[in-house]
Length: 258
Image (cartoon, rainbow, N blue to C red; front, side, top):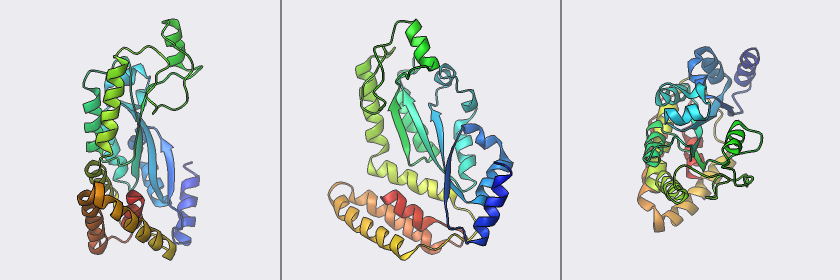
């Protein structure tokens, strides 16, 4: 990877950066500044992190040692290299406290992660979690493979009804129009960079953006007009006033609207 990135960056520069790249990584990517710098120059625009939870005891339970330390600072550092952070989160660990739902909401809000994939913990076969729950006699069967359908395949420590209620509260909150659009704007501000001149939006991208904005605009007149038009207005204002040589605000705005 370290040998490939300089070659990839050189190719991108010669060809006007035709591709925006994305990848998946562990949170400790934030500790590797040379790698972050190489990824930025190669045109990586997004990275998915398996953050799981802001609760340290639950991270220990999940054996996520690479997620220790100040997670908010780690996310912001990655964003400062021009990469939008997407992330996965889980509730239902044995060590989750009663306020886990509020803590997940606060973390997602403060981290400016627009696309947060939140699910309920399920045990998959041949994993450390599966083997532990099997030893403890807590398995109820195999998981469906979909951790968003509000079912469990093991006996949880927290009341399952409270877990489902709390999970639904998280999803309703973080994807309410005002919350979502504010995170999108915050993410766009954190990731704006002056590194290279991105390829201009193609006519079909402008048409897509116009069509989506028009259709969603009418839909949002009914359910979320104020938040939608505020986001679009602020995004367009930043496009108009930005002096950055490489600013993907138009693409980001279209992406987040869709």
